[in-house]
Amino acid sequence: MGAGGWQWNDAWIFVSAVIAARLERDRAMHAALPVTGASLADVLAAADFLHHSVPSRAELEESVRRLAGAGLLVVEDDLVEVAPAGEQLWRTRPFSGLSSAVMTLQAQLNRGTAPGDSGWTLDEQTYATAVREYSIRLADGR
Image: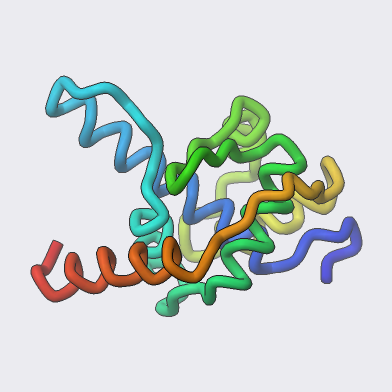
Protein backbone atom coordinates (compact mmCIF):
# COMPACT_ATOMS: atom_id res chain seq x y z
CA MET A 1 0.00 0.00 0.00
CA GLY A 2 1.20 3.49 -0.75
CA ALA A 3 1.88 6.20 1.81
CA GLY A 4 -1.46 7.88 1.06
CA GLY A 5 -3.43 4.64 1.13
CA TRP A 6 -3.59 4.02 -2.60
CA GLN A 7 -2.46 0.66 -3.95
CA TRP A 8 -0.64 -0.04 -7.21
CA ASN A 9 -3.79 -1.78 -8.49
CA ASP A 10 -5.76 1.43 -7.96
CA ALA A 11 -3.39 3.34 -10.22
CA TRP A 12 -3.38 0.47 -12.77
CA ILE A 13 -7.17 0.44 -12.96
CA PHE A 14 -7.37 4.24 -13.07
CA VAL A 15 -4.90 4.49 -15.97
CA SER A 16 -6.75 1.63 -17.69
CA ALA A 17 -10.07 3.46 -17.25
CA VAL A 18 -8.59 6.67 -18.69
CA ILE A 19 -7.25 4.82 -21.75
CA ALA A 20 -10.51 2.90 -22.25
CA ALA A 21 -12.67 6.01 -21.84
CA ARG A 22 -10.60 8.01 -24.31
CA LEU A 23 -10.68 5.19 -26.89
CA GLU A 24 -14.44 4.85 -26.50
CA ARG A 25 -14.91 8.61 -26.80
CA ASP A 26 -12.85 8.63 -30.01
CA ARG A 27 -14.83 5.67 -31.45
CA ALA A 28 -18.13 7.35 -30.64
CA MET A 29 -17.07 10.69 -32.10
CA HIS A 30 -15.87 9.12 -35.36
CA ALA A 31 -19.16 7.22 -35.71
CA ALA A 32 -21.25 10.27 -34.70
CA LEU A 33 -22.64 8.32 -31.72
CA PRO A 34 -23.25 9.56 -28.19
CA VAL A 35 -20.39 9.03 -25.76
CA THR A 36 -21.56 6.56 -23.13
CA GLY A 37 -18.40 5.60 -21.25
CA ALA A 38 -16.10 2.62 -21.50
CA SER A 39 -17.39 -0.88 -20.90
CA LEU A 40 -15.78 -3.14 -18.33
CA ALA A 41 -14.43 -5.17 -21.27
CA ASP A 42 -12.73 -1.97 -22.53
CA VAL A 43 -11.16 -1.43 -19.10
CA LEU A 44 -9.97 -5.07 -19.01
CA ALA A 45 -8.43 -4.66 -22.46
CA ALA A 46 -6.56 -1.52 -21.41
CA ALA A 47 -5.40 -3.20 -18.18
CA ASP A 48 -4.08 -6.16 -20.17
CA PHE A 49 -2.33 -3.77 -22.55
CA LEU A 50 -0.63 -1.98 -19.66
CA HIS A 51 0.34 -4.91 -17.46
CA HIS A 52 -0.07 -8.02 -19.66
CA SER A 53 -2.68 -9.41 -17.29
CA VAL A 54 -6.37 -9.05 -16.66
CA PRO A 55 -7.36 -7.93 -13.17
CA SER A 56 -9.39 -10.39 -11.14
CA ARG A 57 -12.98 -9.56 -10.25
CA ALA A 58 -11.92 -8.69 -6.69
CA GLU A 59 -9.05 -6.45 -7.87
CA LEU A 60 -11.28 -4.61 -10.32
CA GLU A 61 -14.14 -4.21 -7.84
CA GLU A 62 -11.93 -2.96 -5.02
CA SER A 63 -10.06 -0.43 -7.15
CA VAL A 64 -13.16 0.91 -8.91
CA ARG A 65 -14.93 1.18 -5.56
CA ARG A 66 -12.00 3.17 -4.09
CA LEU A 67 -11.58 5.38 -7.18
CA ALA A 68 -15.30 6.09 -7.54
CA GLY A 69 -15.56 6.76 -3.81
CA ALA A 70 -12.81 9.36 -4.16
CA GLY A 71 -14.71 11.03 -7.00
CA LEU A 72 -12.24 10.04 -9.73
CA LEU A 73 -14.45 7.60 -11.66
CA VAL A 74 -18.17 7.36 -12.27
CA VAL A 75 -19.62 3.87 -12.73
CA GLU A 76 -23.14 3.08 -13.87
CA ASP A 77 -24.01 -0.54 -14.56
CA ASP A 78 -20.99 -1.79 -16.51
CA LEU A 79 -19.94 1.58 -17.95
CA VAL A 80 -17.00 3.52 -16.54
CA GLU A 81 -16.38 7.23 -17.05
CA VAL A 82 -13.55 9.38 -15.77
CA ALA A 83 -15.04 12.02 -13.49
CA PRO A 84 -13.95 15.67 -13.79
CA ALA A 85 -11.64 15.24 -10.77
CA GLY A 86 -10.10 12.21 -12.46
CA GLU A 87 -9.59 14.15 -15.69
CA GLN A 88 -7.89 16.90 -13.68
CA LEU A 89 -5.63 14.37 -11.97
CA TRP A 90 -4.71 12.83 -15.33
CA ARG A 91 -4.03 16.19 -16.99
CA THR A 92 -1.86 17.48 -14.14
CA ARG A 93 0.27 14.35 -13.64
CA PRO A 94 3.95 14.58 -14.52
CA PHE A 95 4.18 13.25 -18.06
CA SER A 96 6.18 10.05 -18.16
CA GLY A 97 4.74 8.06 -21.05
CA LEU A 98 2.63 4.93 -20.71
CA SER A 99 5.52 2.70 -19.66
CA SER A 100 5.66 4.36 -16.25
CA ALA A 101 2.19 5.94 -16.10
CA VAL A 102 0.94 3.59 -13.39
CA MET A 103 3.82 4.32 -11.03
CA THR A 104 3.57 8.06 -11.71
CA LEU A 105 -0.17 7.98 -11.13
CA GLN A 106 0.16 6.07 -7.87
CA ALA A 107 2.51 8.78 -6.60
CA GLN A 108 0.00 11.45 -7.73
CA LEU A 109 -2.85 9.63 -6.00
CA ASN A 110 -0.90 9.39 -2.76
CA ARG A 111 -0.25 13.14 -2.82
CA GLY A 112 -3.91 13.92 -3.37
CA THR A 113 -7.22 12.70 -2.12
CA ALA A 114 -7.68 9.61 0.03
CA PRO A 115 -9.34 6.48 -1.35
CA GLY A 116 -13.07 6.34 -0.86
CA ASP A 117 -15.70 3.63 -0.85
CA SER A 118 -18.50 4.07 -3.36
CA GLY A 119 -20.15 0.82 -2.38
CA TRP A 120 -20.07 -0.33 -6.02
CA THR A 121 -20.08 -4.08 -6.44
CA LEU A 122 -19.14 -6.26 -9.38
CA ASP A 123 -21.00 -9.53 -9.47
CA GLU A 124 -19.46 -12.68 -10.93
CA GLN A 125 -21.82 -12.76 -13.92
CA THR A 126 -21.08 -9.18 -15.00
CA TYR A 127 -17.34 -9.78 -14.61
CA ALA A 128 -17.52 -13.06 -16.54
CA THR A 129 -19.44 -11.34 -19.34
CA ALA A 130 -16.78 -8.61 -19.58
CA VAL A 131 -13.97 -11.19 -19.64
CA ARG A 132 -15.81 -13.19 -22.32
CA GLU A 133 -16.36 -10.05 -24.43
CA TYR A 134 -12.68 -9.13 -24.14
CA SER A 135 -11.64 -12.72 -25.00
CA ILE A 136 -13.80 -12.65 -28.15
CA ARG A 137 -12.17 -9.38 -29.19
CA LEU A 138 -8.72 -10.90 -28.67
CA ALA A 139 -9.62 -13.94 -30.73
CA ASP A 140 -10.99 -11.70 -33.50
CA GLY A 141 -7.86 -9.53 -33.42
CA ARG A 142 -9.70 -6.38 -32.32
